[in-house]
Length: 246
Image 1 (spheres, rainbow, N blue to C red):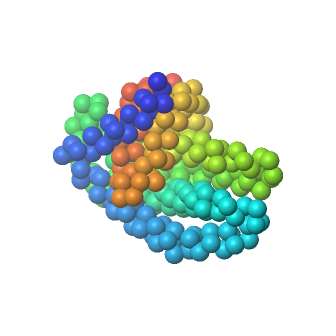
Image 2: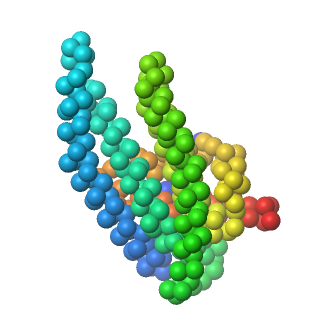
């Protein structure tokens, strides 16, 4: 089943990070992720709980019997939004390091020696990495706004939680598979087309990332695991795509 196969690449990513020659390239993405998720968790605990209590107070009396359910549902959605948002921000900051990690994982998987990287090499990748992250944001944000609008439309808003789950999985697939794609010169629009051709596979991968983001402590390690897993997915499923589009 393609969904399970996609999730399996995350497991492979975790195993890859155990390789001694790759561990050194994990530290900086991991550090950025820990800092950003600590901030996100602090925000969630400090503000969201209070916002939800205020929201529940204004619910009609006939909904009082399921207040606990609504509180849990909306808190979960808020938590998901916070963690996704801070994950995107962390990826924006760590993009050059994630691209470097993807490059080293690909070298390992293809049998090449994992070459050392100088500070100059890393600095040279920063403009390209930031430009690619801006392309991702320009893709995500209009769709986020559309989902927010739908959430206020009676009748349609009942499907919003499921749309968020699907969109979150798709968003995470694009976010991470793009690192090896970008390293190999695949344009952003061609990358999206390639993912769409095997949608269930990539939804399985992205859904796994979204799920792990909700697991305390594990979410600190999601970024490097997802980068390594996405690179394994690229090597197995998309190798040669760069040649097709050149």
